[in-house]
Length: 289
Figure (cartoon, rainbow, N blue to C red):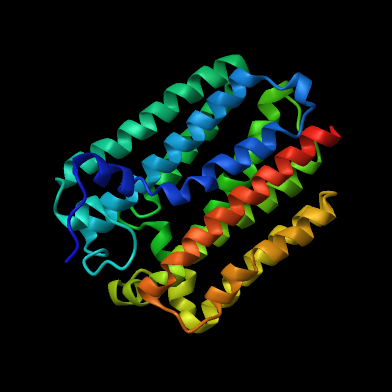
């Protein structure tokens, strides 16, 4: 058995750093849709704080809820605080709500500078983060995870980050919201493909668990195609083609016979590709705007 991580490292691992591109990329892409000279940097930083705090809060919330339900009893994915027994469940729950609170404070500051309608949007985002695996009927257990990921890590984050620059929404932000949302869904599928067997045994009916390991590979492929098509329609056809090329190693893993822990590199590859595409889009916008 591998040595347990130290007191600080265990919290870092449970925050799941490899999932953070799903929060960071749409914010940066959305903010960079305006002319570089007119970017509101304070609003952009507040958006990043909100996004990262809510993502980390959701990761801790999932750690707590899955742990107390027993879903993570046989764990093949990244380290979990609750399931490991190294941290009291109540502390993990407090950490989740502490992260949500940080996001709420940053969100209130952002709303005071732009529009108070953002408060209502932020409340729904926090509730979506908690009830993904929390509550009596968590929607993540019934195959709705992709829908909410697309909404909040795609459209809300990208379009919202663009809106807070000048209180206007560029038409292209919807297409790039679809692209970043599809990237986030690919990240989710990388996670769910790895956990198919464990989720089936625990009664967690993600789309991947419903389809089974072999057929669920097509979910990942659909996400990749959606990324490329959204970029093409949004006016960045070259980056759309680059996206297909960059996702090839991940697609090979998704359609390989690998399962369980053998698919851990798929999450890493998906996160790296998302960061690369986000950086490429942002650099392109800065040059062409």
